[in-house]
Image (cartoon, rainbow, N blue to C red; front, side, top):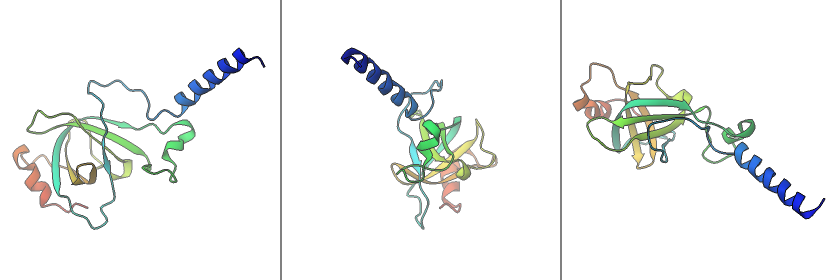
Length: 150
């Protein structure tokens, strides 16, 4: 094989690999992207902070070629990963995103739902609480602190 053909073949192969192993799938969204908060098992920890959001978007996270991104042997992988995005309730802050296993999301979670995230540190969520309609926005955090979380 001639040198120019090798270079062209390698370039095409590199492009193919980068497309196949790209994290996530392209999606259209009106919100800017940033690193999401990440769900962890509670392991007898209690939340040190709560954040209340109104859900704007929920989507399944891509797993790469042949689902390799969800391999249990990879650090940070989780079963059936989902991304939930929403705006903080009561503030004009940036969009909040959380990545969690689909099985950890509340069953009736939908766009427009109010969700309270229990955090153990600035990056890790240990519980996701779906707020009932009877709880006022102004009291969501105090409601969440009275719930079993984690």
